[in-house]
Length: 77
Image 1 (cartoon, rainbow, N blue to C red):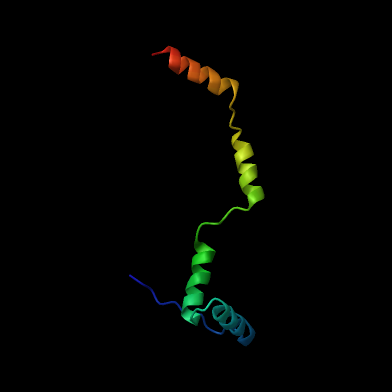
Image 2: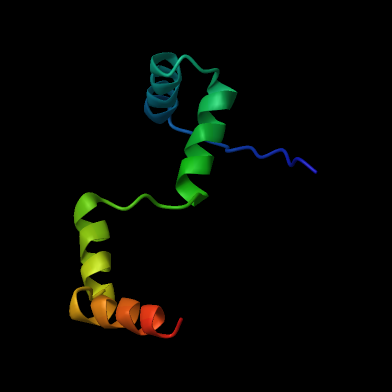
């Protein structure tokens, strides 16, 4: 069930920045606030460097190991 949220005492300068952001994205103020909330609590996208570091940390090995595995499977037939 949807919930109504409100933010009180938003400084004029901040409110104007959100209005401008909504204009740039061709959204209503309500739509922009929803997008900001979804971005804030949704899954975080990794940068290319972070993704590369995670892949390297997994240390997948190929080559001799995969060759031996394929031979073993082939010979088992």
